[in-house]
Image 1: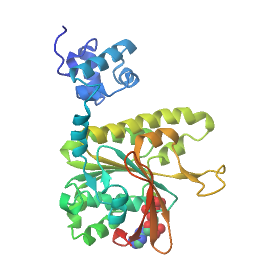
Image 2 (image 1 turned 90 degrees about the horizontal axis):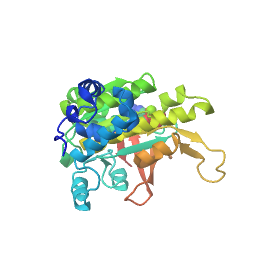
Image 3 (image 1 turned 30 degrees about the vertical axis):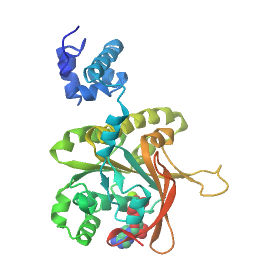
Length: 315
Ligand code: ADP
Ligand code: MG
């Protein structure tokens, strides 16, 4: 029997220097090591491949990770919280609101209302549970410079909240490029407990990645980075019981002749990481449609809602 592993410093082969490097790179707990990939650790702390593998395995063993009985998973599911979208129709479609412990993706064309959903939920997450919130705060990663405090104020006023207070509970960071966006997501872990974060928003997920990786030849590199980003966001959601809401752009698919020829960008990586996917589109007047495209536990369907000065509302 080796010695008991309680902190990163106890991991075999890592050494004091390696442990410091891991800490500096944000791997502060055995949990963080246990869910990392060997590649990540090799990069973060210049560990050899074998050492990284062993460290991860040791962290997993120490935490008794691996199989969990289904009753424990059921207990964890019971803790899932939900944030109202502002529309009871839409909430119903997605099982009661935007859920914690996973990523929800909303995608649609330009001006389909994606950012409006972000403004709305940045406010509603602050509501108490009985009013559809989680009594928590919002961390907002803005990659398109589209965050609008004046819209947040309108939504807050409509819900009878003190808009000054509401604004103080939304922590906004501009992401200037894909690496910066990834870093902001990685750093988010530190803020979640400190600032009582219950919702992390990324608006938009792909804009920076698309701008930077243009040619076909760059696709593999882009997807690798994107994969890491999605894993970071998934871990944030699962390990902290918070909701992650990302917006996504669409591309037209010339191969689809019938029906709607638009599809979300980001390929399989984004598709697999997003547990709930909603397609937003305009309808007549101020009416809009949200279509549930992919959910592991709910039937596909559509809900009608509106976007007004007050935010997201029922028709
Ligand atoms: P995107 O999907 O590109 O993020 P937005 O969320 O910015 O789109 O949605 C823009 C749309 O939201 C506008 O075209 C308009 O229909 C609606 N909208 C924005 N502000 C208001 C407002 N104050 N009152 C009513 N509708 C608004
Ligand atoms: Mg937008």
